[in-house]
Image (cartoon, rainbow, N blue to C red; front, side, top):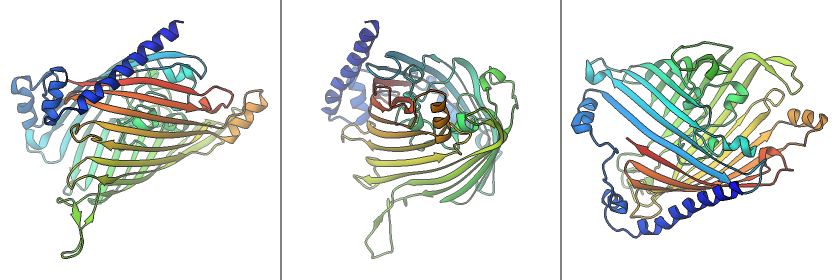
Length: 436
């Protein structure tokens, strides 16, 4: 009964947000003025404004800050292992210092970010492979990542060293943040379980080299510590712990950049529209010991991935209003990786209503597969036969003000946890984010 009551509260908030949408759509005032009139809130870029001009003054000297609060509140009324509701919240602060402006040292910069986060893991309660929230990991107050970066040869070569979160750069979604479900909102969900690639907010020591001989092409490679229990090995993020076997990461990417006027083509010929896009292929190798389904250890494991993100339609030249699509896959050998295949497909429509320039509609599909080796061995032990989990998401991001948005979401899980015996699970909830 308590779960039903909690679910009704979540559904009420979800419905209330939907009721607000027509009121927002009906406005005909400019975007920021419209946002300000929605609830009578100020339309500045940050909740706390410009700090009396200090924020702008510091940025002019090369020092920028980003502070935000974000939370996901979700619940499943039926299906899965159990019915539950859960919330996860995070407060993050980031600092970037560019020495180009501070002391005229060209190409040198420093980055640092830390956070506090807490909450409950709804995915674990339901039993899903793809977590309903991309925020969930461990309760912590931690310095996540920090690095020193130097650019060379007119920014063609970049060297970065410090504490890095591998999933921020290898296997991450270009349109991440447009969805709540983990493999779409952040990065492939099996990168850490399969290969122990470091993740946000548990960065590990590493070095990266990126070379971009042309604006449209780059290659990059890293070596990062593959800490298998990072929160225990380095609870605060300040110990710079190098543990277990290292990860060796590689990625090559091709980028599409539209011309300044949004068109291309020979003079006198019909102009051809060029929309921004990103195409990348990468891989990770870890030479450590990995157990198979029976617990027998073997040396080495790898994971490969490919991702494509492309704007396919714009209503007007130079406008961001239109449709973006993305697709990705990853694969790891099934003898040592339990969840060895994941496929993601997503689409988002920016500014679905002309008067709501910062709103967005998102839809996504996530396919997660249990390897045959682990499924067969589990069946021999008396467990259920496991196959694949299919999850879909639909959301609407309502930009209430430039510093605050609310994002109601509906998700649906088929074969929860790749177990066809579990009832399918719908998930309702919302995300909210405030930039300070």
